[in-house]
Length: 186
Image (cartoon, rainbow, N blue to C red; front, top):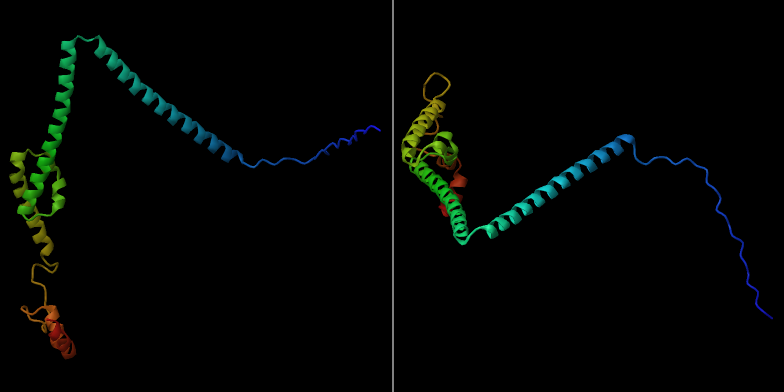
């Protein structure tokens, strides 16, 4: 007896008749589209910049290959001169900043004056005179702030605290228990 193949009936899926609701609103879709366009623009700019740098590098190598030996030596010397002049400028700037900081410290002025435009733009030889002018202005301003608002009279002091006694000493004097405690600590 031969085996007969059993044929299964093919089941057709039933059609679902429901409306599909969009999961993204039009505003969100437009925002996503704008971000995608922005990303593509930035990406293209980066690719163009990288390809330009690579193209310039290759053109420079080709130009070197076309040069004679003498021209190649001159070009390399020029590159070294440019690199060394850049380093020299950096060292000059650092030396100037160090000189400014040092002279500000000697004049007992705050370090934030190192960013003063007059100091930054001054030559190294002119820095001492600029610092003298800054100190004069700083002292004048400090004196103005130090004057009391009541017309130039000295500020009132407490009659219980003499001028020669510190605040800590007056507190200790007023509290004998604290005086005994601190006696062992001093």
